[in-house]
Image 1 (cartoon, helix red, strand yellow):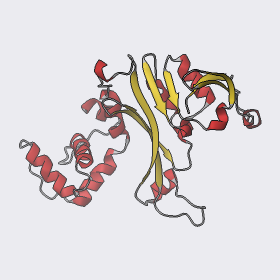
Image 2 (cartoon, rainbow, N blue to C red):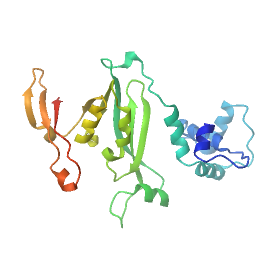
Image 3 (cartoon, rainbow, N blue to C red):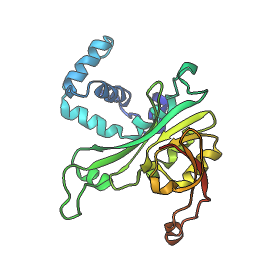
Image 4 (cartoon, helix red, strand yellow):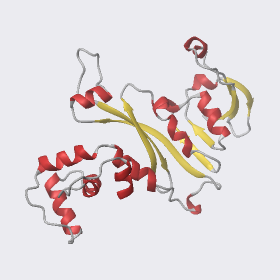
Length: 245
């Protein structure tokens, strides 16, 4: 933790009661007790570690300022530094580690920074509700370990936002994903990395049936989008896939 704090440039130049290192653990405790207010979480931390110093003059505003000093990078980097797949062989499917890629929308506080970073639904003059962040994560199915996640605005495409998560799919993995994450070029890229893929897609994308199989599934050819050339993007080659309805 000290190394990550130092690399992020968040170390203290003077000794603080609410140090950066302590604030990291405080934020982790907030995640463990999401329905408990700041001061109650602080008391729970004290009960859990009797060696902690006494806090005098600490209130909700000072805890908020400590979180603002901390920033988001210090919370992301420790996760990426320590997280590893935890599933054992007994949780594999035919020798493959099963991973799932999925996205969701989360509402965030209605601040000027969040409105600029994430945006709201509705048109610009009459945006509605709270700003929403689009979160896409990759998780190990057997242990439910979240291996990595990326965050974008609510208008951002799940497929584009999550491209950097592809590094977790490699030889010996089976990656499950929903249709919002489909991309033909991405399919080829992941197959070249050695990953096995089981994805939902729209039926119209795999309508060029090549062969019917005895178990009711079929082999179909997926062609690149006709809009790729108009958009100025490089066309991916066709893919032959097995379709299971």
